[in-house]
Length: 268
Length: 285
Image 1 (spheres, one colour):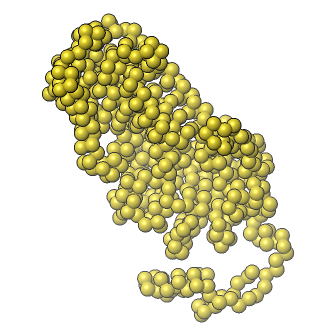
Image 2: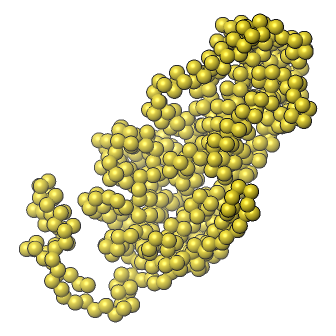
Image 3: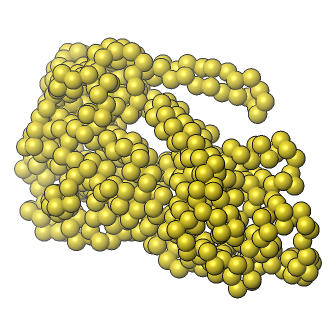
């Protein structure tokens, strides 16, 4: 617990000293713009009309509610994957990785500290998306239910587990741009953020199932717009948990096995 | 005691000439069949030119990388299999300005590094206070490291390296790029860590005078192999170097030290390395 908290404080202090207020403005602005653009398209180009198939795929939700919920969860996905994924490579670039690996500290609490810090930041952007979305007409009445909060927590856990594997990939390839940006753009295209994935070819829909964001965003929408309970969505919850277990195991095992050889490739 | 026997390290490099090119595998033998000992309370030196294998040796001894062959024990315990146990008892201090979080203060850095070793809050605060006093950073403890001078960063590195009260310390060029006064302070601190606090120290340095001043035993590395070993007297004996009396003019370094000390009012400006009279010294070469 001590290491979780101290990692949280270390990252938070560093960020606040580097970008005391501009960071917050950037986060909120990003959240606002994510909703304003689809709102303009929906209101002025589409004149609030969507096809019947959209309603069928979206479970009867209107487009703004659909987009706002998708974008809000996508914000959490991108933040979590990005910050967990690049935690170690940032240490490498700042010259502190060697000291971290020299210590006997386990990686679990370290990553949990990174998660805690980034989640508190990402929730700001998440809240901005929801507030602006509500102002633009999204129906978010059930966002504060236990089911919705569980769906958010489950989603963050899934993103965290995937981030652990991504961390190893980034460290191994020593690349952040292609890894994170290609992945994030692909996810926002295929996971059902701005439109139902049923519009995509079947094979793309199948590929989308390997990302925890796909079942998580469906679960989130089902409980917020569909008013469903968690029991009705057992299959989606199971899918997120299974994917999380696979990514968690693969991430930890791979990182543990490769940590030393990674060090050798870095320092050798 | 840390005991390495017949340690070797071969790096396997996988290289591609272009994106879709065939991957070439290349093996580089960084360290070959080295055996060395680091006793507690002693300073063991590893000397060699760039690329001699010093850093690879330190990283193997510090359990950061696994040896390709050979055995490594710490106080009789297999250090390769029990690397977490080893990591609790060692620490490393490198020269240069890395290994610290620049946006954090000295105190915050030490708190974080202490937490990596699972040290309790109360004990950690006490230890941080003592270490900041030892390295002379008490007054600068709340200033972010990015505003520190090179010497202050190096002193903080030393405090960081002592945060877990290690039994063995690996010092990789600890006075690299420091001015003569700070380097001297750090050498005195290293000496006291071994002699007064009983720590086993492995020191790599490019400064031969530093090794001569500090090391109880020296290993000379070249192309990944130990090519000579012994006390400084034994090393000199290899070429049957006989002591001879020479009259040597005081070096500019010594003159500079005296000028600085005099202007600061520290003593009479006479350095211990200099003989009375101050204008020349007699040395055994």
